[in-house]
Length: 289
Ligand SMILES: [Zn+2]
Image (cartoon, rainbow, N blue to C red; front, side, top):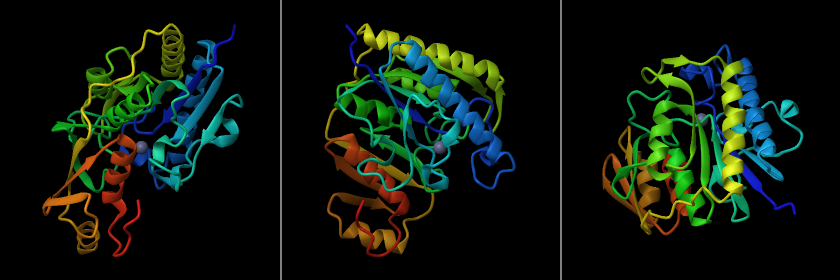
């Protein structure tokens, strides 16, 4: 009997093996084209490991917010999977394909949360806009947001590849997840890295183990976050007039002070969308998110 095992792989760029500085992950960087290839190869290592571990269906979702979330070299991606890419997805931008049919979530190339020191290119959702994102009075990063959302759907997070800090942070909510440490953060923009050729071998092995363990029922959905979630976003710059005007017309947001906005979200699909909105909602009248 072949049990269906859909694997959801979220691919971000800051935690891709070999990459340590902001110029590595933005369009203008001299190595960006090469680094997209490194991203693609880390993703392929995870896809291969997932199928080796018994996946019957693999969906890869692009999570890196440059180039409209089209960063993988699509013609070099393992042809056995499907890829969700492009901006303007319904629901939480980086989790459009995450559903209750998913057996396990793998986080590839993910990074530590805003405020982490060290932590390679640490940020939460928007580096430019957000100084901190807190959920229920605790600092929260993207891997944890995924873990909370996946838990709501009854899905475990089974693996993270990235630096040691991102892995440590995830382990508080998902101690069962495979930690694949492809680089050791020395600061926010420096690391002691395993060359990508070898790092990909670790990613492949970690993904295989994670899927095998998910099939064996060894991984748990995270269900310990109490809802509704009290979300607090600390802005780097005082809230713009445009954003303030928009927030004042949206009763679900509370402006605490010039730098702080709170919201209470029943689930993390909504929570993610509201956090993201604070990063792009500056234009007067732009109140949809
Ligand atoms: Zn990113």
